[in-house]
Length: 191
Image 1 (cartoon, rainbow, N blue to C red):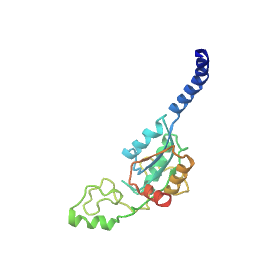
Image 2 (cartoon, rainbow, N blue to C red):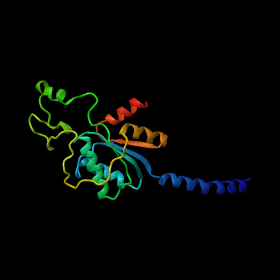
Image 3 (cartoon, one colour):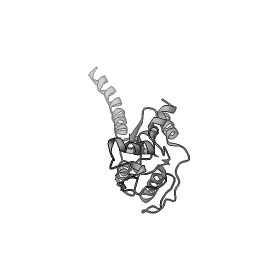
Image 4 (cartoon, helix red, strand yellow):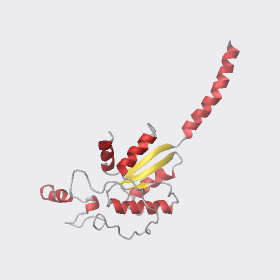
């Protein structure tokens, strides 16, 4: 009886240990949803950590306005991916404007609560305290690191997020490091 148990254990032990090694070494599927102002700022650095990790497979990067407007952030992110030779990672345009607050609402609040040192992509027009010069949301200035030659995916971020989560059920981690507008839109479309 003991010999039979050892034989059964040997037949199952090796395949199970190989399977455990496979799952332990399989990279985690990650979607990056964040703002991506650049060049080389904290947003870009956070993306680089995950893009270069052997433990992570980045399915795509969905962009949202944060420190800068989303169209400019898409350009910075595309260029960063070109520079690190990772143009295999899709960049997906997302929300340009917040769902609940407008620029005028935010600026009008200064009368009641005072000025903030940071207004994101809007900049502090009244007191000129933002590090980034303000520009129209749909203007993409010439990038310091050079303009990208690659293009973003022709899909919106909310639908891309939904599609990837459905394609890989219970396997996707969403790293949301910016305003959660894209996530809110995806949840509204497909709770």
